[in-house]
Image (cartoon, rainbow, N blue to C red; front, side, top):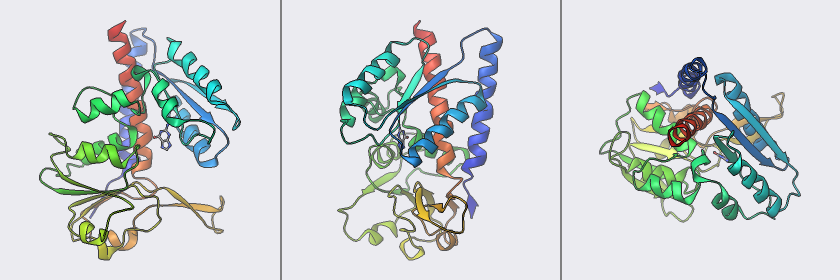
Length: 294
Ligand code: GUN
């Protein structure tokens, strides 16, 4: 069994990006600049955004954090988005999800300039991804592809089962694993809350990508020998023995499933750090594309 070490690979990617940034600096070029908008005070979202900003510092990017109150109106947020769209200093930005109930997420995602949409959530970019065109691939699916590629995990002709159809992970992952090329060329089954007899499906899977958010959902009895496991779950589970009072738990019963798996991602230290590394990669790509256009 091989651990797919997202912490190590994400550090390698950050080192590669740092090298690129140093070259840009040496040539007197502007370094990539990522902005993040966060609306409200959700603890997990604040943690994620903080990690994204710290990662920018680590690779030498400029970063801007825009904090807006939980009572922000849709119009106020759309005004801020227009400001970032019009600011030539900003190469890419993200609007951290979820947004408070008074704001229509679809409307917000449509307002982001697709050339700065480093999350890859704008319908224009999502459509390009589905059509194999150059775009921004959403960071978590992009990170999973990168892990599979760097560990040389065979995906061609394999049966990949994706659990969960979220717009951020499950849906794009199901498209990407079925694309022509590597990683890809898989036969994909997308399962969700209406799927009947999921064990019958997971037990036939060569690769399982679980993005459900239910701690320890996937048990050893549900998988076959030598399965490849990608665990995208990051649920906070109360735990008084830790300083924070919680621990991060994945969708997979790691202790038992890892005994049957050929490759498996740990939680934490698997997919999570890859997401941040690929957001940086998309920001670097945005910066390079803007320079070419200028
Ligand atoms: N919320 C959970 N994951 C993500 C992500 O990848 N991007 C944004 N913007 N919000 C998220």
